[in-house]
Each structure stands twice: as C-alpha cells, then as structure tokens.
Image (tube, rainbow, N blue to C red; front, side, top):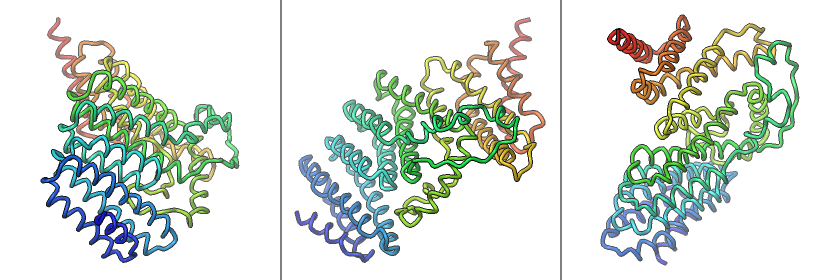
Length: 414
C-alpha cells in the first residue's frame, strides 16, 4: 500500500524530476530486494503496483494532453518506466516466472485500452523480454502469448484501410489500365480515422515482430500446432498487406486524404513523439515492413517454401517493371501516380534483394536441380540487367554464383 501511495502521488506531481525519482526509487527497491521475495509477493507487485502505475501513466496522459511541457514530461517518464520494468523482469525472471501469465495479461489489457504509442512501448518491452528470457517460458506461457497476440491482431486491425478497395470501382483496377487514359482528380470523403489506423498499423507490426522472435529464437520450444497457427497468421497478414501495398492508385488518394485529415486534427494529436520512428504524421500509408517480415517467416516455416517463393519472384519482376521512368507530365495525376510507383518499386526491389540474400537464396540453393529454380534465377538476372539506381553488388554476386553452380552441375551430368 505504501509503494502504491508513493508512486500514485509521484505521478500526480507535474515536476519531471519528482516523477522520475519516484519511479526510479521504486524499481531500485524491487531490483535490490526482489530476489528474496516469494511468488505471492511478485503477484501482488504486478497487480497492486505495476498495473496501477501503468494506469497512472494513462491518466496523466489524458489529463495533460494540451500542455506541451506535461506532454514531454510524461513522454520521458513513460519511456523510463517501461525500460526499468523490462530490465526488472529480465533480471528477476527466476522469481517472476510463475507470474508471467499475469504479466502478459496486464500488457494485453493495457494495449487494448490505449491503442496508441503506449501500446507500442508495451509491445517493444514484451519483445525485449521474450528475446532475453524466452528460454524460461513454459508451454503454457507460449500458448497464452500466441493466443493473445492473435487476439491483438484481430482487435487492432486497421480494417478501414484494408476494406478501402470497396469505396471506388477504380480502386480495383490495375494501375497500367488506368494510366492508358488521362486520370481525372477525384474528391473523396473517407470515413476513416487516420490517427487510429496509423496506431493500429504500428501495433500490427510490433505484434508480428514478437511472433518472429518466437519462431526464430525459440522454435524448439513451440508446439507444431502453434507453429502452424503462427504460419497462418503471417500468411493472412502477407496477403492483406501485399494487396494494399500494390494498389498505388487507391493509396495515392488515401495518403492525400490522411495528410489533410492529420493537418485539421493536428491539435488533438497526442504524444506523437513517444517514439520517433513511429509518428502519426507520416505521409505514407504502407504496410511494406509487415509484408516483408511476413514473407521472411513464411519462407522459414512453410512446408513448401518454393510455392511461396514463386509469389516473391513475381513481386520482384513487377517491381522491376514499375521502376521504369514516368512517361506522363509530372504535374498531371498520371505523372504523380507513375512517380509514386517508381519510388515504391525502388523500395520494394531493395527490400527483396535483402530478403532473398537472407532467406530465399539459401532455399533455392537446396533445390538447384529443380528446373523452375534455374528459370527463376535467369528471370531475376535478366530483369536486373541495365537497371540503374537499385544495384546491390552482394545480391548480384550470390545470384550469379547460384547460376554458375547450376551450370557446373549440368556439365558434370554430361
């Protein structure tokens, strides 16, 4: 009770130094004396101290939304609190292990309640914990974690963006077909909360990063049933994100609208500096990171990786085709769309080159005797010839070496 009273009034004090001293002292005490405490003590700390502490963060954020100085102080204290708590769990894992399910539940509830940058800090903290103490998780812990991540992916999905295809018939047409004629500007009034979608977009990415840690660092501790569930989740995310990412025409209008929406609503934006890399002011609506994170895990987990790699090959070839120089005037809508596709294709090609070197080429190397593999490698080589601006010497070297291995194998046969 004393600790709870202390941290409560420490947060009510607007002075940054008082807030941070209160939090720092709390975690110093827990680090120093926690090793001697029982499991019941840690359960009490999680439910009676840590959870109320997070509630105070939420309350303070809402109370001081319009005070810039208070925003900065809460931002600083919030980051500090999650960092200290993460370090506490990692260092005291032996004592806290029986409480891990309680910890997961607290984090999931907090994420669902906030669905903003505090959620991102929660997920970053959870990811770091798993990276460092995943070997201490039981099968029951893993089952709960996967179940809750699946729940988050469902509850925090930017569905409005994924369903935007239905808002206009032209959104469902290939861009090349639209570019055959002069595209006239359109005005849309999207009933989509840009800030909310941006936050959900980031939550989805962080959730998948946690699943990736599970299947890459602790694959032997996860049941085959859970592996299949994780694979299914990544496959679903890949298909949704790829469809969204490749619809340049729809994204152009969504991004134009989102910039205007954020400008009008700028006064209500809350704590957009909690994480510099995750700003709601981004002018681009894209799920590129999620698409390629999902692709990496699918190649690793799939029982038939070649079937999926065929989709990646086509994505590669489409990106090379889209990298061609714009033909229309830059001051026209057609020209803007071509320019957007050109820039997007450059990003996709770079990301695919890295993905292929890390994950895809090792799979192809194991299947060099397959005719379809040699066909794919030749297609990639031809597509990349004489294309400036996207060269990757290491990628080209690996690609050529694989082709040379195929030629050597064929020569040895004869």
